[in-house]
Structures are given as C-alpha cells and as structure tokens.
Length: 397
Image (cartoon, rainbow, N blue to C red; front, side, top):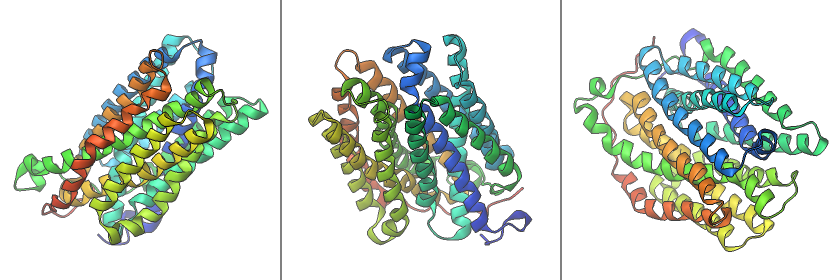
C-alpha cells in the first residue's frame, strides 16, 4: 500500500486518527466498569443483577461485531467504526442519570451494540493502516486505548473523591466518542478487503486455522481482561474493604502495565518471535490472576492485576496482527470472526465471575482465568504454523 491514502491524507495521519478511535473506546469502557459500584448503589442492584446486565452487553456486542462485518463488506469499516462510536456515545450518556432498571438495561443494550461494532471495526482499520504503512503499529494503536482507559480510571477516582460523581467521567467519555466518530466518518481508513470465498482460491476453509488459533488467544486474553476490568474495583472495595477512591486504582495499575507492554511490543515481537511472546504473555496472565487468589490483600491484588496486564497488553494486538497478516486478502472478514472470540472470553470473565461472587466469593472466582490461560498454552505454539494466504489487491471505494 502507498503511504498516501484517499483524499491526500497520509497513512501516518490516518493511523493517528484511528488511534483516537481506540482512545474513545478505552475511555468509554473504563468509565463504565469503574462506575459499576456507583451504578449498583444508584440503581439498587446487586452483583447478580450486574452479571445479568453484563451478559446483555456481551450478547449485544457480539451482534454489533457481526453487524460491523456486514457494514464493512458493503461500505467499508470506516462507516462501521463511526456509527459504532455514535452508539457508544449515546449509550454512555444514557447511563449518567437514574432510570428504571428496564430502561437502564435497554441503554446498556444500545451501548453493547456500539461496543461490538467499534471493537471489530477498530481492528479492521488497524490491520489496513498497518499494511499501508508496511510496519507494525497495532500494539501502539492498542496503547492509545490503554492510555485513555488509565485516564478514565484516574478521572473516575478524582470525580468520586471530589464528590462530583461518576457522571462526570462517563459523560466526558460519551462526548469524546461522538466527536471522534464525527471526524472519522470521512477520514478513517477507506480501504477494505474481499470476502474470503472471493479473495482466496481455497475459499473460506483456508482461513479457518487462522480464525481458530488467533481467536482462542483472543478468548483467553479477553477473559482475563474482562475479569480484571469488570471486577477489580468491586473486589477491592467490597471484598478487601478498600476506600471508594482507592478501588479504581487497581484497574488503573492494570492498565498501566498494559500500556507499558504495548509501547514496547511493536519492537519486541519482530525480534523475539510471536510464538515465544504469546506463551510468555499467557503465563503472565495466569501468574497475575493466581496472585490475586493466593494473597487476599489490597497490595497483592493490585500487583497481580499489573502482572496480568503485562500479558494481556501484548497478546491482544499480537493475535489480531497475526490474523490480519495470515489472511491479508480478506482481513476485514477474518478480523471480525476472530473478534467474536472476544465475547466468549468477556462472557466468562465478566458474567461467570459475578455469578460466583455470592457462593464462593470474587477471590476464588479469579481462578477461572488461571485455568483458561493454562488450557490455551498449547495453542500458542501453533502460531508458527500459520501460513500467509496469497492475497489479492485491496480494493478501495
């Protein structure tokens, strides 16, 4: 791909705009998960009801990912991304005020639909602009997500400490998502790829090993991420009796570790190899969550979240990059399919941990991600066997 895209905008400038899309997603998601204790108190709901709401969001997000694939195939992933950001902004804005629980659930349903559309289309956009630049940038794009998530957690902590309330942080995220979507409607990466049945002589069968291997890595990574993102603040505040202003800092520390790992991954992975890095990342995820279970103290839990963050930070962009490069001629479709594994992991990490919080407690529920990453370790070795499928030129609208 050339360095200058449609409209004379350079690929580097477009990559930075896509990075703003990652930032909008990270800001919004972190604002929501760190506001969960506030939502619980305001709406008068318990962990079980929260788990049901999270299940609704996950199901809606999976539908949003499928919808993004359809929109990308017809018009391009830039429109899927911009539309998803509008839905995210509207959903976030709706959560800032009290509403009957049925209405609150409907608001989160809309947010989940936008969340899934943005998840899938961001990775499509990242793969396309990375190919246009001819160098690895996926980890740095995800770093923008992480930096914004840290900012949201710190903003939430400050808002709660000052008495301004969680609505300040969530409302800020809503406005940012809408602004980025409006700018990106015409300026996101315009390229798109063909369906696998058209792009590759072997048809859709040729991309199945890519989807399976990369998808399972995404499943494990997002299981850990969802467990920590959703329940770290609740665990620190409700189980370990941390102050309300301290509880979001566990998530901020986790995201800090994710950020550091993503800032170095684009340089480290090409030198070390994806297989070794993937195995090490899975191990870090397991050790970090294991520490949370082994030592029920605020300091140990925060340290465990940070260790897990190192693994998640590298694993997610690594898996999407591997999928995009192995099936470059149909990367939009393949990335959308790989992204669906995200929601299986989110389902277990967010919903199952919450369901187990009453009978066994959140501390022991963190064993679930430990078991998952250990079971996924053998799959990481198959990364070296993924072959690049012969591509066709990327069409642009």
